[in-house]
Length: 395
Image (cartoon, rainbow, N blue to C red; front, side, top):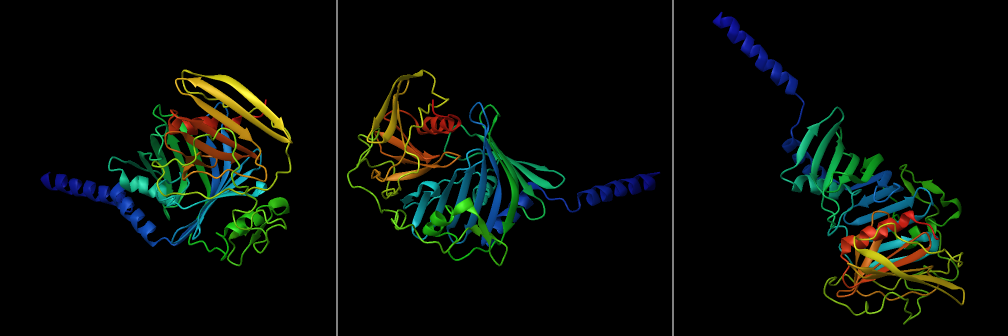
């Protein structure tokens, strides 16, 4: 009887060992992830990002390219309006490009080292390896991590990350708020390690000109990697995008930026250069675009519409718990010289924050330039207001 009991115990132990064979725990996966990032030379990913920040979910096509040591290209396309903006990093700095408007901003910044995005592989892995309280699940085809979110905003608290078991490529990311509501959802359609890019894939002029080719057609290189159309295209005859500065009128100032220039402190040495813009094809009225979100205790005080010499602009003033203005205009062939600035992730694009005591958040979308200026509005509230404005159409 004792021998039978002993044999039964051994069978149970062997069964347990066989059942566990081939499975990895969280520590083993984290070790592998560190090795993957350490050996990674490049990657290319594509998918769909959905922002659940307003009444209606907003979808964006996302394409991400990365090549060591520090080259990045992120293209965000609004699925409904077919408007693309590109965040680019190369040896010259960090650029925010709006090819359809021939508009670019350049920064000297260590982005994305100081602020990652939910669709960047390094950011996701850093979140996993840096959270000692991470939760781990082994699903059929995926390893799933539930970890703290670290995106420089109090609105995003937790994130759930699905990684492919075969190569640790990202499959899906869900970022939630303090009430466990999903705020950002990214689903990758494809992700490839070791992608090969053309020599000009991260060049600013190439991305500005190629993206505006008729139909935004794409070419494929010998390695099968998708590249911007017509990489050898030259800037247009008026030189609107020749060097990132052409067409700038010195001393030009737009409403809503008073007091922002010359501020120091919060943004350190991350200086921006003058943006450049070509006159848009449409200079008519776009109505009044109001945010669908306002902080508690804040209300619209008034709005001012200006139409002079073919220029159309809107100034909205809010008061209450926080006091701020929102300025809207189509960028013409002139631009304001921004104070030292830094990039901030708006989800649908990158914005620029300048100033110290008086801060201004600037971004462009669908041919309209926006500025939120305030002396007391927190940055996370600025971001939330900006995000809500992408749902609105001119009234």
